[in-house]
Length: 109
Image (tube, rainbow, N blue to C red; front, top):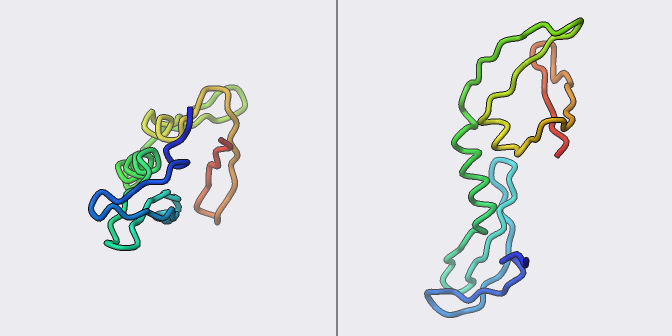
C-alpha cells in the first residue's frame, strides 16, 4: 500500500502545486504539504495523529510501584505509554542515568 506522502497534492484553495516540507515539533517530524501561493498547509494524517497522541500524554504523571521479583526490581509501564510507543511484550529497552536523580528508559523500536 502506498503512503499518501508519495503523492503530489494541489492546494484546495488556489489549485496550485504544493511543496513537501517536514516540520519539527516537540522532537516529532511532521510531514506537511504547503502551498507556496496562499501559504495554506496540510500535515500528514499519520504524523499528525501520532503528535496529537503525544500531546495527550506528555504532561501526565504516571506513578508506579517498584516491585521485587527474585533478586531484581520491576517497574510497570502504564497502558497509555505502551500504546503510544506501540510496545509489544518481549521488546527490549535500556536504562541510563541522565544525572544522579533521573533515570531514562530508552525504547528500541
